[in-house]
Image (cartoon, rainbow, N blue to C red):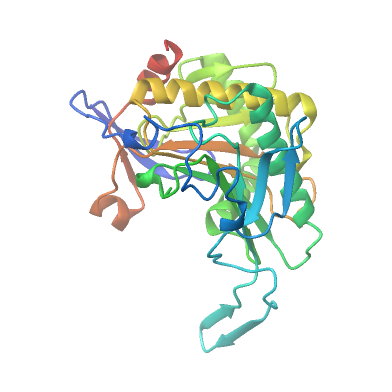
Length: 327
């Protein structure tokens, strides 16, 4: 059986299959058998001289760091670069101004979000918000993207748990599409599409993975890839930087739980998660809603997907959600 499903947010079509023969190919060697401290790891305590300077850090009660934020060793963009724009004919250029930071989430080499203490996960999330808010002071920046690449298939090349920040002088196309599509929905229905999505998913229950007082985790109706999950706040807010203390706690719980379920279901796959939030200079948007997207990297894209913009998902989101709920 196959269906074409339309994403209600950006009107993207996905081909959804019920392929009982589909077998995930996880990238599990990244997680198992790690020691608490790895002498050669540049992110382990004692090797601070192997990384660039510390931008900011949080220390524990003993005075040792528990989170470090540093510039990427080979940054794609630099804040020191002057912002200049130019055009030659139909071609537009912007100098490589921006920021590329690494958030080292824990001093322990063998931990990840799902195995870290809850208060440590909360500190990571607060650090994300603090960095986004701090970078608002640089008015050259239009957007800040927080993302995590875990495992080789997801673009991660260092075992030690970390995530990254990219601050850009332009707004990414995917984010702009989301904002514009959400605005079109709001003009038509006078509601936020994400708020409506939360209400519908809670009522229908089929695609809910886990829920708490502040957040809902679902497998999206038009999931692009197997076991894709979205974490959506129940309180409407367009800016992740506005997250409050109760929501930091709630997001810590549901992110940790969602990744635990994913790891149990797929034997520790490579994965990405991405925080989608409003552009830096946008005011409070009644039509847009920040959220977190979690994507296990267990299926490669082929020619049809690259050529058409369609995704082919061999699993039904409802069955995926049911399986994850059971874990």
